[in-house]
Amino acid sequence: MTTLEATHMQLRCKHCGSNLTGPVLMRLWHKSPESIPSSWPNDRQAFSDPGTAVRAQEPYVRNVGDGPTPHLGHTPIDFVHPDDLTDTLRLTEKQGYLNGCCGLDGCDGPNQLCQCGAEVGTLLTDCWTLYGFVPQPAETVWVNAQRQTNFPRRPPKS
Image (cartoon, rainbow, N blue to C red):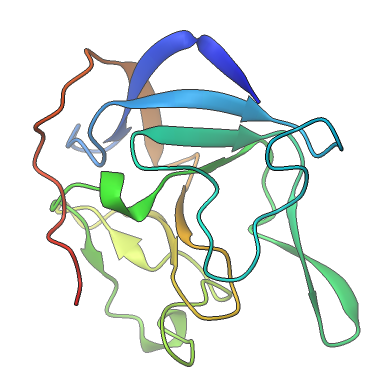
């Protein structure tokens, strides 16, 4: 992985400007034997530690059912550790977007809303998905930010 100009970035809602994450270090990732990790994370594993977001240049593809299926079909695709999300996010009320057996599988569309109601991203927390938040590019924007250690994070889920 390479660092994107070693800059701390912060994700914001394009509609109301609310901070959706605290400052995170953005890293670029390409799937290759030399990359760390060398492939997509396994089930329930995050792409990175809290404080670091990852930008992948290829679509996230899952192997389910009849074979590989593109998931969250935009590129580049950003992955944010759920611990870096602020408490301005909430679950959608669209029941069809809240599927999963023991968490959110993110298969049906954005399941996270900004406080203004914009559908800003998809949280993946199910037992058979990677663990992370994927922002909707049309609804969010990354801005330069100062590194901070104390920002209002989402309370941990028990």
